[in-house]
Length: 208
Image 1: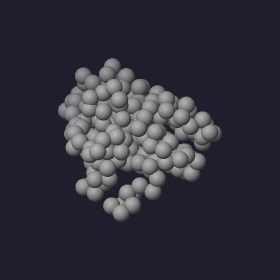
Image 2 (image 1 turned 60 degrees about the vertical axis):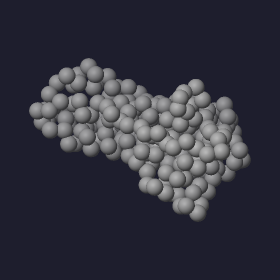
Image 3 (image 1 turned 90 degrees about the horizontal axis):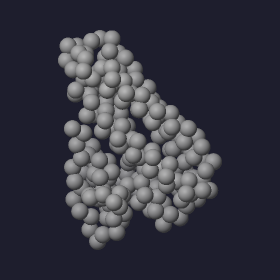
Image 4 (image 1 turned 180 degrees about the vertical axis):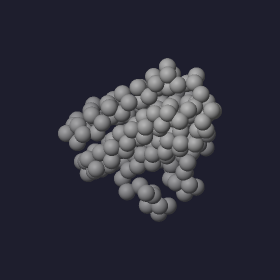
């Protein structure tokens, strides 16, 4: 994905870092369900799922706000992932309702474990469809049609929350499963996005 000598071929390629982190979150949620023991509770799954759902929905909604207004010329390229994004958010909402109303206070049995695993696996599949659509259709257009300055504008809207403290929560979340070299690339990215002479240390984001 990145190297120390050429960390990002284009600024917009930082979206690959987000995609990698989202894939890790989905895999973690699926593995938690797979390892639930019959007779235990679903409590171990809840914070992992809610963390994944929050980050994913934040990312999708930020894209839907930023891209049509900032990049109207790529509307055609955005049509494919846009439909998948809506389906994915609806699936996450349905999974949250299922968790809260049907199984959160019950004991794990084989049937409910299978049902939950199937719902999580479907959400993960929809997420993969979305990310693959973005990588195949959207990112090449953003990379080739937009200036670097406009690419940085998009990243700033997606990754920096101007009204929050700290502003780099999304970036810190991306960093949590990175290698050392990838974290250095991300720290450099943070410096540019925050407009500081040196980026602050990435704070820790936890799913718990």
